[in-house]
Image (cartoon, protein in one colour):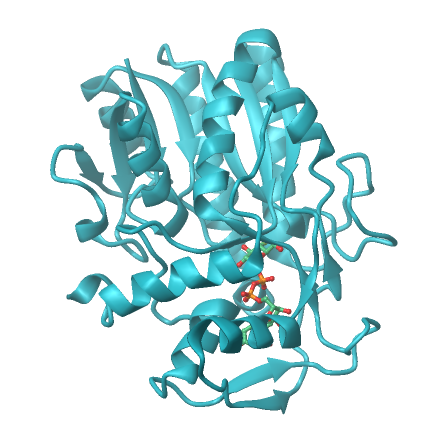
Length: 326
Ligand code: UFG
Protein backbone atom coordinates (compact mmCIF):
# COMPACT_ATOMS: atom_id res chain seq x y z
CA UNK A 1 0.00 0.00 0.00
CA UNK A 2 1.13 3.56 -0.64
CA UNK A 3 0.79 7.00 0.87
CA UNK A 4 -0.27 9.70 -1.56
CA UNK A 5 1.52 12.98 -0.81
CA UNK A 6 -0.20 15.82 -2.61
CA UNK A 7 2.11 18.81 -2.96
CA UNK A 8 5.05 16.43 -2.50
CA UNK A 9 7.21 18.61 -4.76
CA UNK A 10 6.68 21.61 -2.49
CA UNK A 11 8.52 22.81 0.59
CA UNK A 12 6.89 20.86 3.43
CA UNK A 13 5.58 18.06 1.20
CA UNK A 14 9.05 17.16 -0.04
CA UNK A 15 10.33 16.97 3.57
CA UNK A 16 7.44 14.56 4.17
CA UNK A 17 8.42 12.42 1.20
CA UNK A 18 11.98 12.26 2.48
CA UNK A 19 10.76 11.18 5.93
CA UNK A 20 8.40 8.55 4.50
CA UNK A 21 11.14 7.03 2.36
CA UNK A 22 13.44 6.92 5.41
CA UNK A 23 10.73 5.02 7.29
CA UNK A 24 10.50 2.47 4.46
CA UNK A 25 7.03 3.44 3.17
CA UNK A 26 5.86 3.42 -0.38
CA UNK A 27 5.05 6.95 -1.65
CA UNK A 28 3.29 8.53 -4.61
CA UNK A 29 3.45 12.29 -5.24
CA UNK A 30 0.68 14.32 -6.84
CA UNK A 31 1.69 17.89 -7.71
CA UNK A 32 0.83 20.40 -10.42
CA UNK A 33 4.33 21.93 -10.10
CA UNK A 34 2.83 25.43 -9.90
CA UNK A 35 4.96 26.16 -6.84
CA UNK A 36 6.76 22.86 -6.33
CA UNK A 37 9.88 21.60 -8.09
CA UNK A 38 10.27 18.39 -10.06
CA UNK A 39 13.88 18.25 -8.75
CA UNK A 40 12.57 18.06 -5.17
CA UNK A 41 11.01 14.62 -5.83
CA UNK A 42 13.46 11.70 -5.72
CA UNK A 43 13.67 9.77 -8.99
CA UNK A 44 12.49 6.58 -7.22
CA UNK A 45 9.11 8.17 -6.35
CA UNK A 46 6.27 8.17 -8.90
CA UNK A 47 5.30 11.78 -9.66
CA UNK A 48 1.80 12.37 -11.05
CA UNK A 49 1.67 15.87 -12.49
CA UNK A 50 -1.79 17.38 -12.45
CA UNK A 51 -4.34 19.35 -10.53
CA UNK A 52 -5.72 18.12 -7.23
CA UNK A 53 -9.03 19.82 -8.08
CA UNK A 54 -9.45 17.73 -11.26
CA UNK A 55 -11.67 14.74 -10.38
CA UNK A 56 -10.79 12.71 -13.51
CA UNK A 57 -7.05 13.12 -12.92
CA UNK A 58 -7.26 12.35 -9.19
CA UNK A 59 -9.40 9.32 -9.87
CA UNK A 60 -6.82 8.03 -12.39
CA UNK A 61 -4.10 8.40 -9.74
CA UNK A 62 -6.15 6.30 -7.30
CA UNK A 63 -6.86 3.72 -10.05
CA UNK A 64 -3.14 3.47 -10.87
CA UNK A 65 -1.61 3.31 -7.37
CA UNK A 66 -2.65 1.32 -4.28
CA UNK A 67 -3.28 4.43 -2.15
CA UNK A 68 -4.44 3.75 1.39
CA UNK A 69 -3.68 7.12 3.01
CA UNK A 70 -3.47 10.72 1.83
CA UNK A 71 -1.17 13.43 3.21
CA UNK A 72 -2.58 16.59 1.70
CA UNK A 73 -0.10 19.46 1.31
CA UNK A 74 -1.11 20.82 -2.11
CA UNK A 75 -2.76 24.15 -1.34
CA UNK A 76 -2.51 27.90 -1.51
CA UNK A 77 -0.90 29.15 1.70
CA UNK A 78 -0.15 32.86 1.61
CA UNK A 79 -2.02 35.02 4.08
CA UNK A 80 -1.34 38.26 2.17
CA UNK A 81 -2.36 36.86 -1.22
CA UNK A 82 -5.58 35.48 0.22
CA UNK A 83 -6.60 39.04 1.12
CA UNK A 84 -6.35 40.15 -2.52
CA UNK A 85 -7.51 36.96 -4.28
CA UNK A 86 -9.89 35.15 -1.90
CA UNK A 87 -11.53 33.14 -4.70
CA UNK A 88 -8.26 31.37 -5.48
CA UNK A 89 -8.08 30.19 -1.86
CA UNK A 90 -11.63 28.89 -1.63
CA UNK A 91 -11.53 27.32 -5.11
CA UNK A 92 -8.20 25.53 -4.76
CA UNK A 93 -8.10 24.71 -1.05
CA UNK A 94 -11.70 23.67 -0.56
CA UNK A 95 -11.92 22.20 -4.09
CA UNK A 96 -8.77 20.11 -3.56
CA UNK A 97 -9.99 18.54 -0.33
CA UNK A 98 -13.45 17.93 -1.75
CA UNK A 99 -12.02 16.22 -4.85
CA UNK A 100 -9.75 14.02 -2.76
CA UNK A 101 -12.50 13.05 -0.33
CA UNK A 102 -14.99 12.20 -3.08
CA UNK A 103 -12.33 10.13 -4.83
CA UNK A 104 -11.47 8.35 -1.58
CA UNK A 105 -15.15 7.61 -0.97
CA UNK A 106 -15.32 5.76 -4.29
CA UNK A 107 -12.00 3.94 -3.70
CA UNK A 108 -10.54 2.06 -0.74
CA UNK A 109 -8.35 4.74 0.92
CA UNK A 110 -9.75 5.68 4.34
CA UNK A 111 -7.10 7.84 6.00
CA UNK A 112 -6.49 11.53 5.52
CA UNK A 113 -4.05 13.98 7.13
CA UNK A 114 -4.68 17.66 6.38
CA UNK A 115 -2.05 20.40 6.46
CA UNK A 116 -4.12 22.96 8.32
CA UNK A 117 -2.98 26.19 9.87
CA UNK A 118 -2.78 28.46 12.88
CA UNK A 119 -4.58 30.97 10.66
CA UNK A 120 -7.83 29.13 11.54
CA UNK A 121 -7.77 30.87 14.95
CA UNK A 122 -7.66 34.46 13.69
CA UNK A 123 -6.58 36.93 16.33
CA UNK A 124 -6.73 34.93 19.58
CA UNK A 125 -7.45 36.70 22.86
CA UNK A 126 -4.54 34.94 24.52
CA UNK A 127 -1.55 32.76 23.70
CA UNK A 128 -0.49 29.98 23.73
CA UNK A 129 -3.42 28.88 21.59
CA UNK A 130 -5.21 25.67 22.49
CA UNK A 131 -7.30 23.67 20.03
CA UNK A 132 -10.40 24.52 22.08
CA UNK A 133 -10.03 28.26 21.37
CA UNK A 134 -12.58 29.89 19.03
CA UNK A 135 -11.81 29.73 15.31
CA UNK A 136 -12.42 33.17 13.80
CA UNK A 137 -10.02 33.56 10.85
CA UNK A 138 -8.84 37.05 9.93
CA UNK A 139 -8.07 36.03 6.34
CA UNK A 140 -9.60 33.81 3.60
CA UNK A 141 -6.64 31.43 3.80
CA UNK A 142 -7.48 30.46 7.39
CA UNK A 143 -11.19 30.32 6.56
CA UNK A 144 -10.58 28.01 3.59
CA UNK A 145 -8.71 25.52 5.82
CA UNK A 146 -11.46 25.67 8.43
CA UNK A 147 -13.97 24.72 5.74
CA UNK A 148 -11.68 21.82 4.78
CA UNK A 149 -11.84 20.58 8.37
CA UNK A 150 -15.64 20.65 8.23
CA UNK A 151 -15.59 18.64 4.98
CA UNK A 152 -13.42 16.08 6.75
CA UNK A 153 -15.92 15.92 9.60
CA UNK A 154 -18.78 15.04 7.26
CA UNK A 155 -16.88 12.64 5.01
CA UNK A 156 -15.58 11.00 8.18
CA UNK A 157 -19.09 10.48 9.51
CA UNK A 158 -20.65 9.41 6.23
CA UNK A 159 -17.84 7.46 4.54
CA UNK A 160 -15.80 6.29 7.53
CA UNK A 161 -12.70 8.24 6.50
CA UNK A 162 -10.38 8.65 9.49
CA UNK A 163 -8.87 12.11 9.57
CA UNK A 164 -6.38 14.29 11.35
CA UNK A 165 -6.02 18.02 10.95
CA UNK A 166 -2.58 19.36 11.80
CA UNK A 167 -2.67 23.09 12.41
CA UNK A 168 0.86 24.18 11.64
CA UNK A 169 2.27 27.37 13.03
CA UNK A 170 5.18 28.84 10.99
CA UNK A 171 6.96 26.11 9.06
CA UNK A 172 10.67 26.86 8.75
CA UNK A 173 14.15 25.39 8.36
CA UNK A 174 15.56 22.80 5.98
CA UNK A 175 16.99 19.31 5.80
CA UNK A 176 20.31 18.83 4.01
CA UNK A 177 18.42 18.09 0.78
CA UNK A 178 15.06 19.84 1.15
CA UNK A 179 14.64 23.58 1.61
CA UNK A 180 12.51 26.63 0.92
CA UNK A 181 12.43 27.86 -2.68
CA UNK A 182 9.28 29.84 -3.42
CA UNK A 183 8.78 32.13 -6.35
CA UNK A 184 7.95 34.78 -5.44
CA UNK A 185 9.34 34.33 -1.93
CA UNK A 186 7.18 36.01 0.72
CA UNK A 187 8.31 34.29 3.94
CA UNK A 188 10.25 36.07 6.60
CA UNK A 189 13.23 33.76 7.21
CA UNK A 190 14.36 33.21 3.58
CA UNK A 191 13.84 36.91 2.84
CA UNK A 192 15.89 37.95 5.88
CA UNK A 193 18.67 35.52 4.93
CA UNK A 194 18.77 36.82 1.38
CA UNK A 195 18.78 40.44 2.61
CA UNK A 196 21.74 39.61 4.89
CA UNK A 197 23.73 38.32 1.93
CA UNK A 198 22.77 41.21 -0.36
CA UNK A 199 20.82 38.90 -2.67
CA UNK A 200 17.70 41.02 -2.25
CA UNK A 201 16.57 44.48 -1.26
CA UNK A 202 16.43 45.30 2.44
CA UNK A 203 13.76 43.40 4.31
CA UNK A 204 10.50 45.28 4.77
CA UNK A 205 9.14 44.85 8.29
CA UNK A 206 5.36 44.85 7.98
CA UNK A 207 4.11 46.92 10.90
CA UNK A 208 5.92 48.19 13.97
CA UNK A 209 2.77 49.28 15.79
CA UNK A 210 1.24 45.94 16.79
CA UNK A 211 0.24 45.37 20.44
CA UNK A 212 3.34 43.21 21.06
CA UNK A 213 6.46 43.94 23.16
CA UNK A 214 8.49 45.43 20.26
CA UNK A 215 5.55 46.34 18.01
CA UNK A 216 6.21 43.62 15.40
CA UNK A 217 4.23 40.41 14.84
CA UNK A 218 5.03 37.37 16.94
CA UNK A 219 5.10 33.87 15.42
CA UNK A 220 5.96 30.34 16.52
CA UNK A 221 8.54 28.76 14.16
CA UNK A 222 8.53 24.99 13.75
CA UNK A 223 11.01 22.89 11.80
CA UNK A 224 9.71 21.02 8.73
CA UNK A 225 11.23 17.74 9.96
CA UNK A 226 9.24 18.02 13.18
CA UNK A 227 6.11 18.62 11.09
CA UNK A 228 6.88 15.51 9.04
CA UNK A 229 7.30 13.44 12.23
CA UNK A 230 3.84 14.54 13.39
CA UNK A 231 2.26 13.16 10.21
CA UNK A 232 3.63 9.68 10.85
CA UNK A 233 2.38 9.84 14.43
CA UNK A 234 -1.02 10.96 13.13
CA UNK A 235 -1.27 7.78 11.07
CA UNK A 236 -0.60 5.70 14.19
CA UNK A 237 -3.14 7.77 16.09
CA UNK A 238 -5.74 6.96 13.43
CA UNK A 239 -5.45 3.30 14.47
CA UNK A 240 -7.03 4.24 17.80
CA UNK A 241 -9.12 7.30 17.02
CA UNK A 242 -11.45 8.32 14.19
CA UNK A 243 -10.41 11.96 14.05
CA UNK A 244 -8.31 14.61 15.74
CA UNK A 245 -7.21 18.24 15.49
CA UNK A 246 -3.72 19.20 16.71
CA UNK A 247 -1.64 22.35 16.90
CA UNK A 248 1.98 21.97 15.84
CA UNK A 249 4.36 24.60 17.16
CA UNK A 250 7.20 24.98 19.63
CA UNK A 251 5.19 27.05 22.10
CA UNK A 252 7.61 29.96 21.91
CA UNK A 253 6.87 33.22 20.14
CA UNK A 254 9.45 35.33 18.31
CA UNK A 255 8.83 38.81 16.93
CA UNK A 256 9.93 39.82 13.44
CA UNK A 257 12.76 41.84 15.02
CA UNK A 258 13.84 38.81 17.08
CA UNK A 259 13.95 36.71 13.91
CA UNK A 260 16.15 39.37 12.33
CA UNK A 261 18.47 39.22 15.38
CA UNK A 262 18.66 35.45 15.13
CA UNK A 263 19.52 35.63 11.41
CA UNK A 264 22.27 38.11 12.29
CA UNK A 265 23.66 35.84 15.05
CA UNK A 266 23.62 32.76 12.87
CA UNK A 267 24.95 34.36 9.68
CA UNK A 268 27.35 36.84 11.28
CA UNK A 269 25.95 39.49 8.91
CA UNK A 270 23.72 42.48 9.35
CA UNK A 271 20.18 42.24 8.00
CA UNK A 272 19.31 45.56 6.35
CA UNK A 273 15.64 46.35 6.98
CA UNK A 274 13.13 49.18 6.75
CA UNK A 275 9.73 49.80 8.31
CA UNK A 276 6.72 49.14 6.08
CA UNK A 277 2.93 49.24 6.36
CA UNK A 278 1.13 46.36 8.07
CA UNK A 279 0.29 43.46 5.73
CA UNK A 280 -3.47 42.90 5.52
CA UNK A 281 -4.72 39.80 7.32
CA UNK A 282 -1.75 39.38 9.70
CA UNK A 283 -2.77 38.61 13.30
CA UNK A 284 -0.39 40.16 15.89
CA UNK A 285 0.47 36.97 17.82
CA UNK A 286 0.28 33.28 16.92
CA UNK A 287 1.91 30.94 19.43
CA UNK A 288 0.89 27.31 19.85
CA UNK A 289 0.10 25.19 22.80
CA UNK A 290 1.06 21.78 21.42
CA UNK A 291 0.25 19.96 24.65
CA UNK A 292 -2.45 17.92 22.94
CA UNK A 293 -0.07 16.73 20.19
CA UNK A 294 2.57 15.88 22.78
CA UNK A 295 0.15 13.93 24.96
CA UNK A 296 -2.06 12.24 22.39
CA UNK A 297 0.28 11.79 19.41
CA UNK A 298 3.45 11.40 21.48
CA UNK A 299 4.97 14.22 19.39
CA UNK A 300 8.20 15.70 20.64
CA UNK A 301 9.64 18.42 18.39
CA UNK A 302 13.41 18.05 18.41
CA UNK A 303 14.65 21.13 16.57
CA UNK A 304 13.16 23.71 18.88
CA UNK A 305 15.79 26.46 18.94
CA UNK A 306 15.15 29.34 16.55
CA UNK A 307 18.88 29.75 15.89
CA UNK A 308 19.15 26.07 14.98
CA UNK A 309 16.13 26.28 12.67
CA UNK A 310 17.56 29.35 10.93
CA UNK A 311 21.02 27.74 10.73
CA UNK A 312 19.51 24.77 8.87
CA UNK A 313 17.83 27.17 6.40
CA UNK A 314 21.14 29.01 5.92
CA UNK A 315 23.04 25.76 5.26
CA UNK A 316 20.52 24.78 2.59
CA UNK A 317 20.65 28.21 0.98
CA UNK A 318 24.46 28.12 0.94
CA UNK A 319 24.38 24.73 -0.76
CA UNK A 320 21.61 25.82 -3.20
CA UNK A 321 22.17 29.53 -3.94
CA UNK A 322 19.66 29.37 -6.79
CA UNK A 323 17.26 27.03 -4.99
CA UNK A 324 16.25 24.00 -7.03
CA UNK A 325 17.35 25.85 -10.17
CA UNK A 326 20.94 24.64 -9.61
N1 UFG B 1 7.04 39.62 7.45
C1 UFG B 1 7.66 40.85 7.29
N2 UFG B 1 8.30 41.10 6.12
C2 UFG B 1 8.35 40.21 5.10
C3 UFG B 1 7.73 38.95 5.26
C4 UFG B 1 7.06 38.69 6.46
O1 UFG B 1 7.61 41.69 8.18
O2 UFG B 1 8.94 40.52 4.06
C5 UFG B 1 6.34 39.33 8.70
C6 UFG B 1 4.86 39.03 8.48
O3 UFG B 1 4.11 40.23 8.47
C7 UFG B 1 4.55 38.13 9.67
C8 UFG B 1 5.87 37.38 9.91
O4 UFG B 1 6.86 38.16 9.26
O5 UFG B 1 4.25 38.89 10.79
C9 UFG B 1 5.87 35.99 9.31
O6 UFG B 1 5.43 36.10 7.96
P1 UFG B 1 5.51 34.89 6.92
O7 UFG B 1 5.02 35.44 5.62
O8 UFG B 1 6.84 34.25 6.97
O9 UFG B 1 4.48 33.84 7.54
P2 UFG B 1 2.95 34.04 8.00
O10 UFG B 1 2.94 34.16 9.49
O11 UFG B 1 2.26 35.11 7.23
O12 UFG B 1 2.28 32.70 7.51
C10 UFG B 1 2.86 31.43 7.75
C11 UFG B 1 2.43 30.52 6.62
C12 UFG B 1 0.94 30.34 6.66
C13 UFG B 1 0.51 29.90 8.04
C14 UFG B 1 1.01 30.82 9.11
C15 UFG B 1 0.65 30.27 10.46
O13 UFG B 1 2.83 31.06 5.36
O14 UFG B 1 0.60 29.37 5.70
O15 UFG B 1 2.42 30.94 8.99
O16 UFG B 1 1.15 31.03 11.50
F1 UFG B 1 -0.84 29.91 8.12
